[in-house]
Image 1 (cartoon, one colour):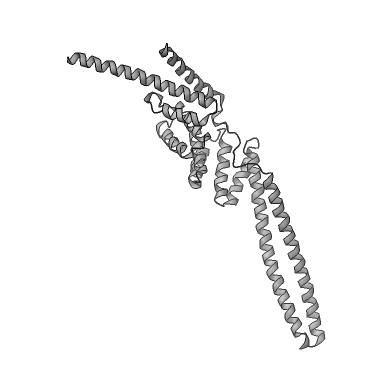
Image 2 (cartoon, rainbow, N blue to C red; image 1 turned 120 degrees about the horizontal axis):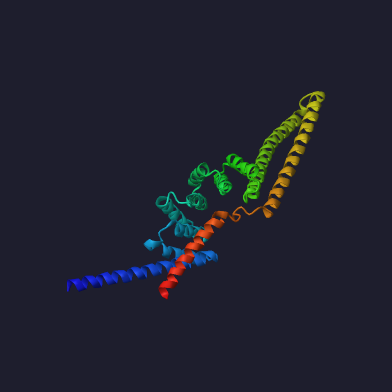
Length: 297
């Protein structure tokens, strides 16, 4: 009786294993299909299901899952899976890209200091990676978001100078122009304030001289009045000129914003578009599909 019971348990175990393997293969194949079609929500769902099976816990499946989460805007899920990936597969060929994705996701979540640290580590370790200029850009964006405009400008300038062919070069140049315009505006506002204060002081002095006009000798006061009036007119011209410059600069900034490079929607990034990567993933998906079809037959 015990022997028959043991055989039954063994048979059920084999049946369950076969069913689990078939379900795992099916989930992975469906996830790959949705991924190749750009259906990120479906790809994320199916790949999440796929990695719930032990046989699918591998760098390829998690790499596609993270890519699907990023493209679907699921930054929190992507960050969790990036951390899991880097802990589980530290020596994977995809580790550089996952490190980059983690830094970018941190930026999207508003974790600017953590994003800078992660992307700086990426740049130090993978200086020749094709995503290097993109990592620099998001370091600059994190600094810009933290109002560290001078530091951000240095990063943007490096992208423009050293990586002019990068997809982020136009956005970096736009940021440089924005920072320069901001600096000009701040300088004009400062000069306007200083000149305005000087103008008010000179005007007050002129009125004071005018009140003394009747109490002093005409010759002495008249000369001071002429000088004060001349100074007032000069300062008034300066104030008007600064106001005109400030208005022109603000108009220029407004026009530039209407035509600006869209830095909020990143240019297409080749993190999952390399031919070698896609070939490997497609080959694995096809192999899983072949095994699944053989089982069904």
